[in-house]
Image 1 (cartoon, rainbow, N blue to C red):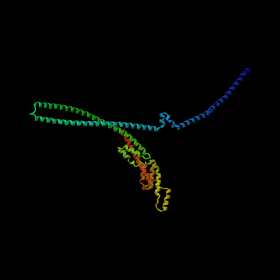
Image 2 (tube, rainbow, N blue to C red; image 1 turned 60 degrees about the horizontal axis):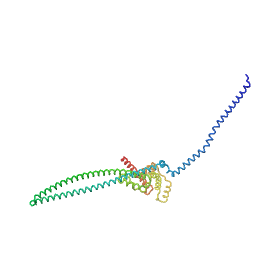
Image 3 (cartoon, rainbow, N blue to C red; image 1 turned 180 degrees about the horizontal axis):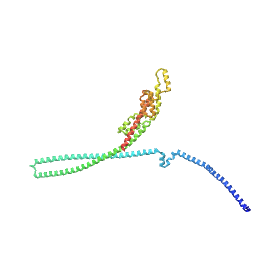
Length: 399
């Protein structure tokens, strides 16, 4: 059926509504696509801020690193110890060793004082014993004189019996009996007093002997402990010096003084005294110098001053270009030097010394100086090994 006019109006309105909706839908994707463009712009605006922040932080770290010595003392103690590293730990260890050594030394001095006091007490007791012996001798002499007097009185009484009143003789006998009883009582009292004094003196002497033995044992233990620690420290210092090329005369003297009663240590360091004044090059230095020394030795051997001027000229020309065997075969000079160089390449100093010792060349040559230093270095290494073994044995003994 045909629509009326009223029906046409809603249709046009619906068409307009659909078209407007389509425009809105078309415009909305554009708006969505324009939305993501804002974050990159915002990110680019933040980049300079981040860059300047990093620059400031690195500048602060740089300045703080180079000014660390000026303000490190203001930091807490544990942070200073962490910044200081191993040197502070070593210093603390050294201080601990010094404190322990001082404590042991004070204990040793105290024991020495006690020993001196005990010795003085022993001397006083010996003087008292001497006085007692003198009293005993005097008592024996008095008793002997009393017996002699009694015998004289009896003999005189027998001679005068006829002329003396009997009552007087009775009184003399009574007096002698009384004197005898008194002497017996006195002797028994003196014997008791002497026995008691002897017992007390014997007990005191035994106690003094025990104290002396204890003091001697403590003193020996303290001396052994402190001397072993100091001796190990001196051996360590000498071993460190032996690994370098500088002189070590002071370390040798110190170890000799501390180990005066250690025959094994004195035997180990005896070969080092002659070379301790000037020092010896290190193993690596000797091995690195050997090729140049070998070349100089070969050039010196092939250059001669004998013959006419033609021979000397040819010898000098040969010195510009040195051609020699390097396979080490044979017993000639070139073979010996080649084997020595091969041993040096293997870091075998003893084998190089053994090969070069086979050469028969001028004692003033550079090769002989190198040989003397190499032998001295081997002697030092052998002494190092011996000292290490002695220290380990001492540690096992104490353990």
